Image (cartoon, rainbow, N blue to C red):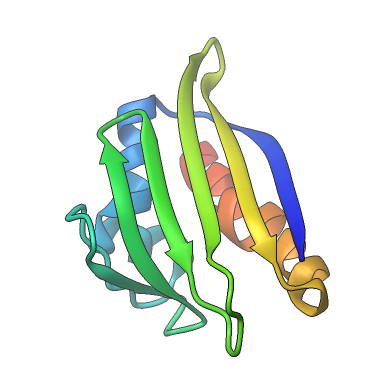
Length: 126
């Protein structure tokens, strides 16, 4: 099991980034895929047409998102914590993803960098 931590700069306000990560209609705009998402703790979510599934744990609007991501056959919880900090360039996103299965690590890091936060940055840069 591995952990991943990285900072990303998104050219939008923390409130805009929070909405982009939690509103299913906005998620569909920047991912191009259907999404099920809610800001209700203990609700299930699904993104990228079911490629990412899990449970929402905690929300602080404009500041923080905590989720559990599901991996087949994994006994330990894989927790994603996203913290949003105001930055002169928009928002500094602090990502921490724990307990990533070794076999999934490289694909997941590529996904965070390209498909997730890379796509979100591109969405706001227009």
